[in-house]
Image 1 (tube, rainbow over the protein chains, first blue to last red):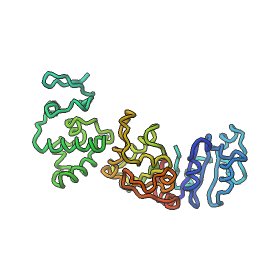
Image 2: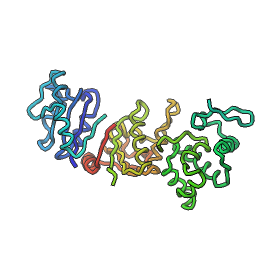
Image 3: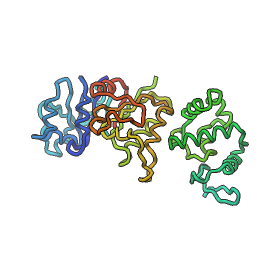
Image 4: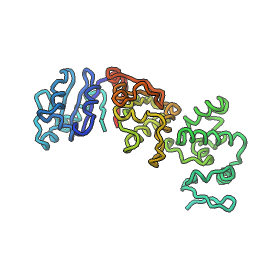
Length: 99
Length: 111
Length: 119
């Protein structure tokens, strides 16, 4: 059953992102919200790791958190608003929030 | 504040009648706590109270009913480790009542 | 049939409430006979080190509490092999009988459960 992993912490101050990336399986999704969108900052190892994720992993980021932080999402990442977040939560079998 | 007087000593209880200070426990205190619950402690009651104190020593928490039954089965055998036996001894609420009499904190994982 | 829940505990034992909260969810769920699994990941594996003495920190003994998991019906206990290795704990005797899993096995584990929460 596919999992949508939801991250909201900065990838520069802890290891949630790197641990999560290792646990993603085919068909799983990753949604970046809050400070987790900093993972898309250009020129960082985190952005590079996300760019290299296989196509069978869905990558998503919350629009308002990107805008607030002046971060541009690459085409590989699908930008969603809150209704889109809800729709995603229903589309995946389960949601794993990394609190 | 809730309190219990045993041999002239004041012993503080919380609002549900559990010992505030676990070191206050003694067999006399257990008898006095049982009296408040209108319970006479038999040998079989004592066996469970000792069992609970052992559980607390080992795990530093009070068991809910299910783990209490499991632990009793493990240590005392299936005739003692079943809900019927424990319910009969402790008015249908073994985890809560026996923990109280054994001087343990109120179990947090049973509603 | 109740939904199964995997609790991922990934914080160290004594520096914040997360490890305690993860354990409390497991114990409460187990007491109600819910099918619960627990996975120790990242710094969470530090909870499994033996002979810890939190008394010096005046904290409740999480290590002792962890030992009660099987009695509370929580027998599906896992740890990340990688997290153990990174912290020099591979091959060490752990305070809990636990199955260690590599990354691929962890992905499969998460997939198997109906619900997952990470603390």
